[in-house]
Amino acid sequence: MYEYIKGTIERIGVGDLVIECGGIGYHLYASTHVTERLSLHEEAKLYTHLSVREDDMSLFGFLSADELAAFRMLISVSGIGPKGAIAVLSELTVDDLRIAVLSDDHKAIAKAQGIGPKTAQKVVLELRDKMKLEDVFADSEDASMDVSATKDTISETAMALSSLGYSNVEALRAIKKVQAADGMTVEELLKAALKHML
Image (cartoon, rainbow, N blue to C red; front, side):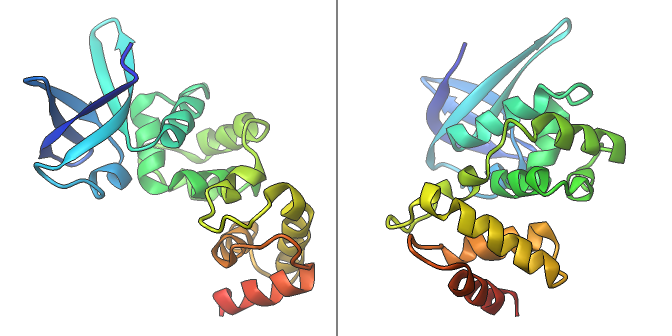
């Protein structure tokens, strides 16, 4: 119903905010990652999701279409409602969620308030096929990075780091920090990633 709301931030709470647009104050629920990046009385554009239940209509706000897409994936998992999805996105950034899902790290997801180990495992199982490794690196600020060309290199480097005792999550985070450029060998990427980990 509402794609986004552009207006002035009038109130920021814990897990919610009010944005004024056209003389109307809209109450939106949001993750802490969203509320921490906003300031009072600044103009903002928030992508929205309207949740309709028998006794409630609630708006949820996100700073990017990517965050909104991750939220919608989360609420597609049985057992996770909108507030559970916001709890996950308060604990993990969208990239951290992708890394957790792709590396079967359900413990990282279970750290979210109200998300138990079984629900976290369900998130990993149901979202594994919907999330891609390339998306973790797609928002790289390095314009020279060719994700399709480096996918094999990234996978091999992650396996090498895992064999050295690092978790898959640690490995993928270190590789993301390196901003792998097209043409980097596994050895070059491994050395650069290890520098970030030490």
